[in-house]
Length: 188
Image (tube, rainbow, N blue to C red; front, side):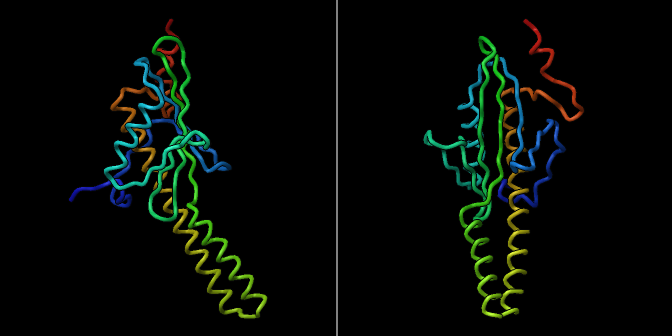
């Protein structure tokens, strides 16, 4: 039996080898990579798309006016906004900083607003059974949305690690807080 990236429950995720900077307030995480091969952010983004498109992920590319480079959807409830920044350090030396922001889809936002409105209307019309059912359904749907967002975040982390290995990007910080690329960065 083969696994695909769309079957997140079947994937055996590797333990993180790269220190992930998580911002709970922004619902995002950040990764940083070092390269001396002159790899630009477009190369990294293309490799991510090449890995995800055959697995049936819907990907929207920024047309220049958004705060993200790629928007990756999994199902109808969750999406990730991926942004890559390249810092040039002379010649072919680069630091690629990747930010992945977990977001609810527009349908998920509309469903949450709909649940709230329905619950308010049921309370105003003194229909406690409908209000209770709506609140229970909204809690269950919220749990599903959070779970799918978490799974999509884990999948994209694994995709970024696979792509980084394929194009020989070095993580700047490992999980044991040792800098893998520090000696390379400090060399003249």
